[in-house]
Amino acid sequence: METETHESVGVIGQGIIGSRVAECLRKAGHQVYVWNRTVKPLPGFLASPGEVADLADVIQIFVGDSEALRSVIAAMKGRLESRHVIIANGTFDPETVASVYEEVRETGAAFLDAPFTGSRLAAEGGSLVYYIGGDSRVLDQVRSVLEASSKSILHLGRVGEASLIKIATNMISAATVGILSEAYGLVSAAGVNPDRLAEALEGNACCSPLVSMKLPGILAQEYEPHFSLKNMFKDAQYALGLGKQLGVAQPVLSTTASVIYRSIQEGRGELDYSVIAANYQKNGAGVTPESRKS
Image 1: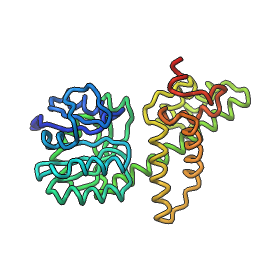
Image 2: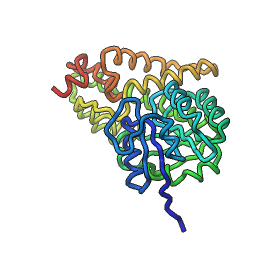
Image 3: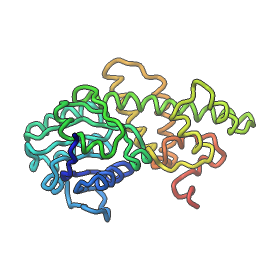
Image 4: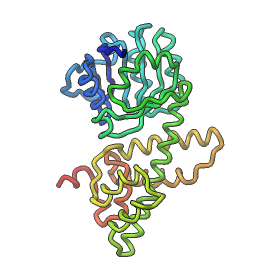
């Protein structure tokens, strides 16, 4: 028989995903303490990561990049003890994850490499999928915390290996949306209604849940961020760096990253990464968060 646990949980990073995970935890009955670099009027908001560590034994970290992860760990390190489990939930480069793991271990605390798949709607519905790297016994210890915001938890190996796999999956997502945007552009330039492309894809083997998720927004020219362009570019940079280290050629990702970078330079970084399709839309050069609302 399963027993409910309602331990205190810290959630560091209150962006698109972290804020929704915190809400899932509250609904599950946990006392939740949060911190964000930009102050937000949220329940349980504390002044620093160190204060979160004082009050919560389990701490989920949803920050934007590897540098931010290092900064948060440095801010908490003096207050970490054997009672703590630190869960790194963002997409970070494996080298940083491994380094941070060693830092956390020195304090006696436990650590999990735990990136996720699923965007804003999945987080709202408590249906993220966590990829876990680390000791299975630590995972069992915090499973109920992760279950509050997930539909599946996959243990994929050692610390760093889950992050590597997450980066690999994002390579596929970036390239898929890149070629989907080009296909949309080709159809549009030929004067064919892009809705016909959507109809054709429904019964085509190349269709996927990602294509089905992103194409409606492209057709409507609506790019509300579920996973931002700037974050996809960050993950592409991690993948390209790993490819260089490991001697793996990545011409498809390299080209896609260049397209993403140009779109960021045009002011679209905060929009959903499917906004690269705006390159093929008449008003694409003017698609920004501000212009879209006007």
